Amino acid sequence: VPELPEVETVRRGLEASVVGRTITGVTVTGKRSVRRQSPALLRARLRGRRVERAHRKGKYLALGLDDGSTLVVHLGMSGQLLHVADRSVALAPHTHVVIRLDDGSELRFVDPRTFGEMFVTPAAGDDGLPPELGALGVDPLADGLTSRRLASLLAGRRTPLKSALMNQELIAGIGNIYADEILFRARLRPDRPAGSLDEPETRRLASAIRRTLAEAVEARGSTLRDARYRDLAGEAGSFQLRHAVYGREGERCRRCPGTVTRRRIGGRSAFFCEGCQF
Ligand SMILES: [Zn+2]
Image 1 (cartoon, rainbow, N blue to C red):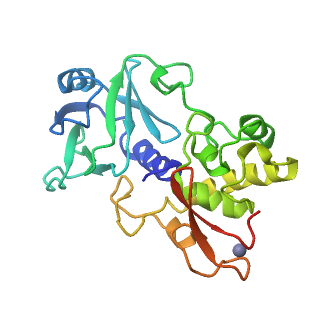
Image 2: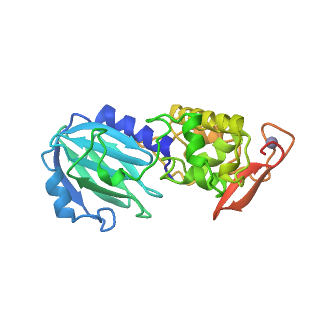
């Protein structure tokens, strides 16, 4: 599932190869990929528009267009956004939307599980983001996340720490993989009540959030064994090689003599070390 680092990697790709291009045509074949509006409306709103900016909030991409509208893309569980320079290259299976650009290239939305979506919304606020994304919480990289801010977000919450980190209305962009990696780096158990952290623990967590996500962006995200996540050019990321706990159940902890365990927490499985996470 693409999380903040994967979506940020795609955003950077869009900035490099799609910003500045004009959309010459759009084909929508998948019914679920465009569901907030009719494919005809999406096509009409996109055709002839120039892409001026590539924003991101949490796991959402927001492409600012030259008439002030915004193309919002969410990759969902398995979505890929691919930029293909040569449009004679065959479409990958499960390609649901193709956006043609004026340099002969194409932006292709591939999504086998169809949880992803795209839509065009007329307005955008001063931050370049449409009101549809207004409910999202702090983006740890774009907005920054101080330990004071984090403390106020977690205060009084009894939900497990891992669930709070994944709550998109508190902090936008963290999912199952990075929550586990962040909590390992912060030496905190995923099942701690979110509101139970003291000041040094909150500082450690805020720093682990920023550091882990920044490192993962540097590594161009994580591509798991299902090979589902790909960047805009179709390349895999490499942060999976640095995963300390995610997917390492039964393996030796990288920090202490303990073993990585897996437990169901807040309805999701969590990987952590009982030996060095408290
Ligand atoms: Zn350990």
